[in-house]
Length: 264
Length: 294
Ligand SMILES: Nc1ncnc2c1ncn2[C@@H]1O[C@H](COP(=O)(O)OP(=O)(O)OP(=O)(O)O)[C@@H](O)[C@H]1O
Ligand SMILES: [Mg+2]
Image (tube, rainbow over all chains, first blue to last red):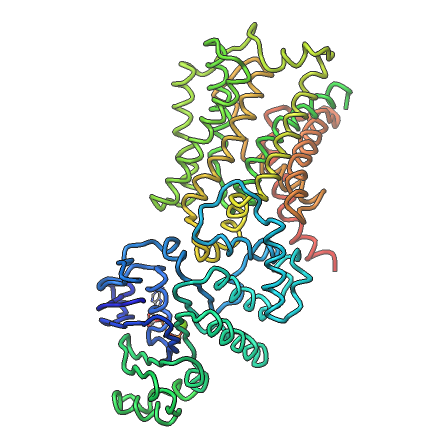
């Protein structure tokens, strides 16, 4: 499905602030994989997802999607095949547009936009059914400006928008981190539901180890820009937080005391 | 204000109102402050005037003016998106380049249209008294453009313009090439401005290279006055408010010019100062209100 081969990404290359955010990362994601991505702050998780999404070009390596080399594709071109939800609930939707207008923009992902109606009556019927499924009662408020909604409501809609046209890969970067625990849990359940229902290939970054173990069929851990752990299948199902920590220290034992973030 | 000053202000308000719609499109919809307009207004005037003196139908000359304006805006858009030049600077560069280009087009600093047939002559032949021809003609044109613009902003393409100005990251994630949107949007804006320029030239009987000075300030003032007075809660409301803002702005200018305090009277050259003060006041109003009204 999606394949990263030797992907390396520097920030501020050649200056004193040079950061090696991804260090020769190779990762092969199979069709239907639901991969949770963990790692301490600055490990390169967001950079990994941004490289897949095309927010910037890697300094080295290639990215292929369904056998097609997309390394040089600009972000908007890749977006036709990707669904994205950001950590910031404000980033995924247009505050000044209505719910239905936002959804219509998402429904036309990957098409050329012309002088047809932005939102058709047919769209409205479809949106009402889809929005009803997320269970927040928003189907009655389709004409309301999205800026009037809460962060959780906006994040639920962003998730719906990301999957309205079935993406080849769904990219979730700590998409529940900015929400209160109850809302975060609701969004997580919704995520699980949509991913299972549409059998989506998914990469989900999270700081919550329990979440990372509970969801998905495969888990990877990043550290200083490299993948230091990659466990899938039966082994992943049996994995516990303590195992994860033990594995981590086995690889990077010397960092033990310095890395508190891993315990959260 | 005399009746004729009032009629004059209406006429100016509507014809410049079309320019204001262009400014609304960049400044508010795309969030792209665009100074190209100071050059594209005389560009539209120049293209239309030269076309007419070469025997082109005055109506057809309006479309030529719009095409030229579109190109000018597209250049600014390309400078900004493809060459990564800051939007303000990109538009200033196009604007000063247009000064030379406009003189080339006219083969001099101005072109007279005296004695030639214009759009307004056609309108007048429909039996209107001559002093009402221009205001009614321009009002009709402004209403037409308002209708088309509102329709456009609700199309798929129009919605991507609104989204690009609101949340770039979101619309890119929906697969839209924002570079194309910006180039098209700034082009469209300047097409409207050039259209207004062409009408103004036909009305005043001449195109002049200096007629664009202060266009952006007048445009901003009108947009802001319109928003403040009529609100901008929805797209149709904001579009209508922009044109009405233009009318109010021209009324205010006419009032100021008619004002006499003792020996002091404003002269037309004070116009830019008055406008700048008006824009500062309107833009600072929300902040001032917060400070003094509680
Ligand atoms: N746009 C940028 N410019 C400069 N440096 C950056 C940029 N984005 C990330 N970095 C650096 O690259 C490294 C990896 O960052 P990244 O955001 O991928 O980490 P992360 O694993 O997502 O961390 P977190 O858990 O804090 O979100 C960090 O050292 C970070 O400072
Ligand atoms: Mg991150």
